[in-house]
Length: 626
Image (tube, rainbow, N blue to C red; front, side):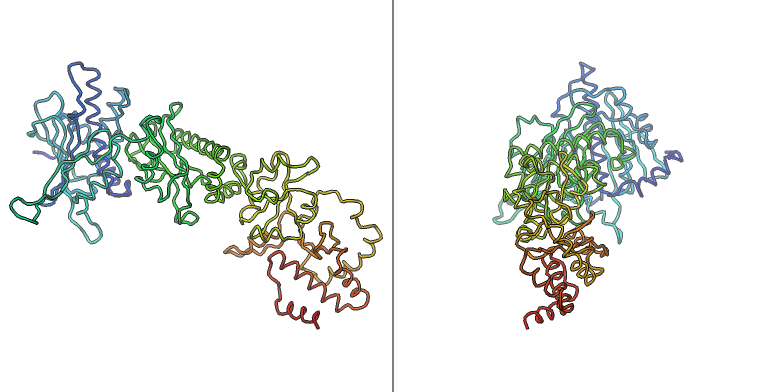
């Protein structure tokens, strides 16, 4: 029997595919099962057009059989089979798919779709097999044929014996090497796990002879090995069921079975889209933050299926980074798959699905915020930081999408509030949305800079996350109200007439403040009388966009950016300390320097900044005590 050669381009493609296209060898089983499912679907299509052909679903199945002794793995189906010509055309010419041609002639009806329309999946068998044999008998034919190949060198086709219609593919599994373990593809538990992973939702039964044991007759306490044929796949995916048939428990069980997390999901989103792009999806908003969520090791993405066949474990393109906490899956028949199911084209369909999913997630979160506030706050504790990163990234491109989902602790409400809630409560005379930054709510409440804003009765948002102020700088304003740090030089608050320093007071203190600025040269941009302080003697304020809290965060980064906020030392001229300061200025320049440095270091400590020279600082305190 003469061996036929693959065409030159097919030969090169086969070598390339085996060595590089597929990233995991185990997917060969997914490809062969998908082809078997296609073969059964083709009989279904034929039955729709041929009244004489009855399609009883119970008669159709896929069987996977491993034989360790002969090192063979067999995948058989009761599908439509192939003639000699079809074996030649479909298997002899790589990337020429019979399923694809069949699909063009037979539009999908009643939810039946051809999966294996990609042409080369069959040849993934050569990643694990030295020899591949296909015996097939076509519907309406009396003669079966055998196709056999050892790889890129070519193939043979000859008549064969086969009683029933269908196809049987037998792989002669390769021997183990130092680097590769091929025995795993003959192990029952491993084959079962691969089927469950990739082909669990193939709509026809996938059967295996599962090993068990039973008591041995006539021998007490002894057992004998048994083989029982079992269906190992679920067949009907939850996402294709009617939502009305499903309960929260069904969704929670699916979440657990798919190992999306060890917690229970806060919410699920079940999407059945039938428009510009057709797809089904089940998405979950987890309750707890995964242990590796804020690390480089965390991998975002949704499981991606094509007609129930898993083609990608984590499709990152379906989720924006700021919604990377979402778990779940998407199944679509519209995706364009190129060469292998792992090489997904970035096409219009994928973009449309991703856009739709983003919108659905946002709507669900807004609904949770409105109707189940306690649940939303639980979610926000886990993932609010990620939403803020989403606002900050890409120069604020997504701020419109995310700003209504943000929450911050309120000085008045003593709890987390939204920006919309803050603005609704603003008095008519309030110009800005005020905020204060610090390590904790407790630290912020003690900041001297909050006094003036609080005395006016204005609400202050407390920023305790290192990303908060950076995110707000990207938003800039909300509902035409700009954000203002309570440490900013100009708070936009009108002073009472009695609180305003007179022109004489300003001139009188001008020389003193200039002298103090000279003492603190290079440390502060200016020293001036404070308009914001009531009971505290001193504080730092800033000029420009960079605040003290931002300076602290940037300096703490691994690359240690040497940034400096433009600091202003503000003195409360109505405080008793100021009297001592003036007295020192009049007759004791050394004491003025001592007092100035002490006040500056005191202001640094209030802000949580490091004192430049702790030894000198303690010595200065000792001088005062003596």
